[in-house]
Image (cartoon, rainbow, N blue to C red; front, side):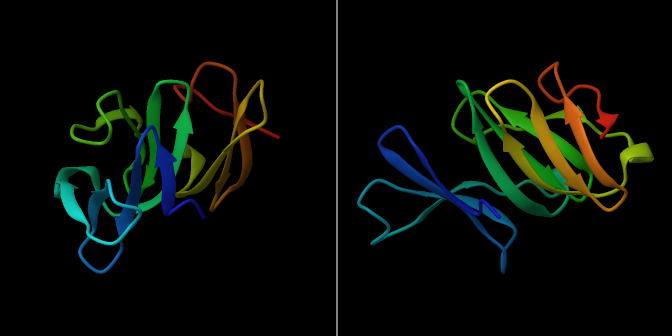
Length: 114
């Protein structure tokens, strides 16, 4: 799972103990809190998707266009199950969920069972 990712000159991670998004500009020697938003649910996976960050949370897929400072719901439907992991295959987003494997060709707004 992508709990630590490279994003520009930063490393961004999910601190699972605190359910925060943290960043480091010195190779992970020190970490600073970037986002502490319980409204997003529990973060489980991060993915760089173009100029965005996408996150799997216990409430669905969320997106950020500012390095993880603010997160907006991209797909909060429970019909797909709980989102666990995201992957980009160069054409589609793939999501592992509690209901199986899904793909999205519109940036994660809607999903089709594979």
